[in-house]
Length: 284
Image (cartoon, rainbow, N blue to C red; front, side, top):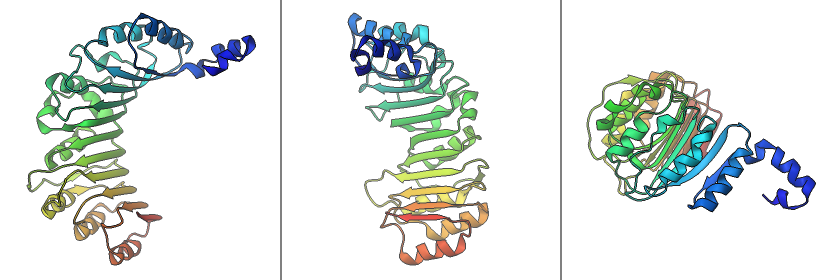
């Protein structure tokens, strides 16, 4: 916006450069704000849009009217929802060109309206990040085939079977970041995901969990294409099970990242020895 205030010539140049008007954060309500947002979006001249919207039930009608002329341009969307204030009429399937979706919830409860919202993404969607809500097995029956096209997912998971179900739902995943908070311990069926290349796994447990939780998880999985693993707050670290996973997967692992207190110096030295493809080992 500053470029448009320097002089008339600079304003003409800036207004004519569509790439300057492709990113917008919408947080204010009212007709004046809507007019300003609309003027901004018009200057994008059909280029792909990256938008951040602060949503609640009272403003969604206005937002929908604002976005309607540009719905086929929106390729990236960041949605923030107020606590227990989810607009029931919002439909993510309306965004026909959407490739990246990030959602921030100020509530850990996924009510039915929100589950329906994320269960039916457009077929163009490739990246999904959800902060503040747990992915649960009971929701998966509503998810459509567009989930099979996702390649990048970031979610919070509260049961091991939900992790496996997520992998089954998304056979094309190349990058997965999950925050786990397991409350049940159970044996898991073996599963191989052939396309996953990057796995970031974090624990949200407020106390040291039973090691069986993580042992079962690593005993069940195979990732023959895994190239990067980052693990945080997994205590105790299932060292032997992880080595078995590597042997079983025969993956070309190149990068390992751990918290400084998760592995011993002996374990670190062993990884360097037994993983010939390893290029980067970070303990921080």
